[in-house]
Amino acid sequence: MNKKYEIYTKDFLKDGNGVRSTRKFLQTIIKLFAEESFQFYDYWGEFPFIYSEKQVNSVVIPAIHKYTNNIWLEQPFKKTKGNQRFLDIATTKGKNIYLIELKYSWNSKNNNIAKYTDNEWEKAIEQIKDINRETIGNYFNYEDYNIFKIALMVMPTYISNKINHNILNLSALEYTKKLIYEYQQYLDQNYQANFIGTIKITNPLKYEHEFLNMKQLYPFISFIAKIEKI
Figure 1: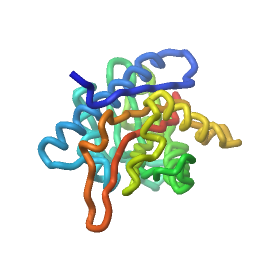
Figure 2: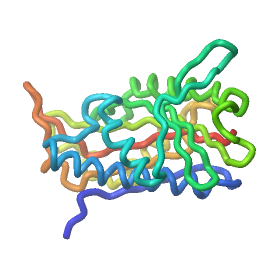
Figure 3: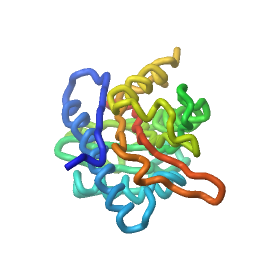
């Protein structure tokens, strides 16, 4: 039986307490995201990652909850005295706590990654800057846990109308390598991703999405992450 998808992930995480578990966390979430997405398609006739960040949560949240058995959305914390904001996702597994700022952006069929994805990626990096043990100290017993803050961008790649584009011939591994190259271009290391994963839909033509005046294929869904231990 042919697989509906294949997955490849690559990271540049340095060894340390909780790092292997963090790697497994993201690898598992990507796999569960893929499974949830196809189940979503069976019910609704379209994928949950083609419109917006809010919609993509339809599968991100169940995927995380299936693995960790807990999730906290819009968790409040004070980045400065009297200045409260909200974290997109918090969850814990074993001795690790994961604090996640989630972003979403499309990538077009172009061989180079579309530059407007940089805006969302850079926003995610900026939003995790003020997450530290002092600002989140009122919410977690951080002395007993490894705490990782994660800027995570979910990025589907789409092809409109032209269905014979050469990226369809790329494997999940090959497409991930393209993304690694793109997200290592930042001179400022703070913006360089240290975890990248890609889901390749094996037969995207089967799941062609029809808009009013065009058709689109979604051959890849990628996950770009910057993971920092605090």
